[in-house]
Amino acid sequence: DKMLKGKEKTLKMPAKKADRAAAIAKASKTKKKKWSKLRTRDKLNNAVLFDQATYDKMLKEVPTYKLITPAVVSDKLKINGSLARIGIKELEAKGLIKPIAKHSSMLIYTRSTAKAAVAAETTTKKGKKDKSKKGGDS
Image (cartoon, rainbow, N blue to C red; front, side):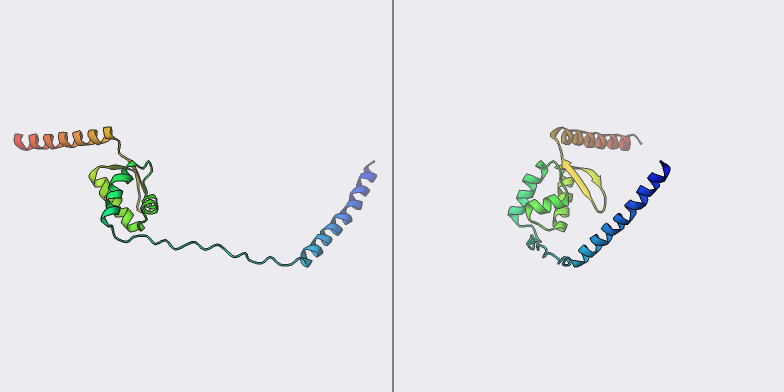
């Protein structure tokens, strides 16, 4: 039995080699693949300065977005990235949006809820009162 098994294996080996050789020969006969022409994207004609309409739209619409990044603002308002970053900083300063992740390469913000805005105002008012008390005591 052991001898038969060994012979079967040796008989199958040349067949595999022949198949490989045939596959290689067939592959070499086929034509080489030509590069497909890539689709070119249209050039974005984004604004470089805020005009009044775009600025008003930013103040009105951007605080309602759930995810606010320079890329999203730039895409929706058709403004360039640096203008989007400036607009986002201004909205944050006004308290209309709140930061989630602040990194030099990725700024992620979300809409500021009414409760959070009220809470932020009350904490800043308390902080001012505390400072004035300390100043009066000393």
